[in-house]
Length: 234
View 1 (tube, rainbow, N blue to C red):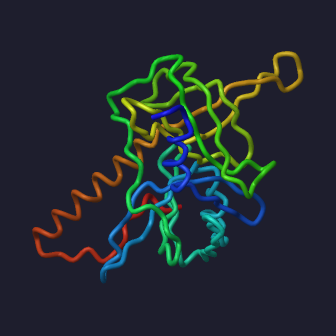
View 2 (spheres, helix red, strand yellow; view 1 turned 45 degrees about the vertical axis):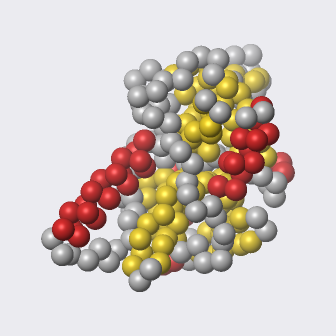
């Protein structure tokens, strides 16, 4: 794979813009769920703070994808927030949105990226919010006490929250986590370059592993799985 350009071509088709009444963020395809009658719901991962207001107050949101727009009323989607992590999902019927048929490969949870490892992410920054933009940086350090969180020396601005952060390993793109926050350096009283936080998506992965196990168990006992899978609703 020649630099980031080839990797970006693989990642960008997975990325959507999530628009709320007073803000927007980014998100990306993380899974599909069986919705019954040969239908599938799409599951979009994003930072929890992007969708928390919409989940709490049950307001509509819009999903923008490659020139298409899908308006989701509260009854047309489920939003899940995972514990105290800044990780969430939106689940809905994709309608005419032609998202990729498969999600990105997730980095093995046992792999810890060391300082200096290059990361890239794609999202919709507020200064150019109709353009899916690419950003890059390097792992500054794994976050002590976490499972898969990293501080990075890259730019994270409003609108990019929820973007997929990826690495290239052995010529293949792997999903490391999602962009969560930016910590500016205000040591001198003004905002200087700081550090970004890439949050692990392991809570989402674990949820779907357990959901699939439950689905297989119900199938063995002859129970139909009528509800689409979702996270802990708020």
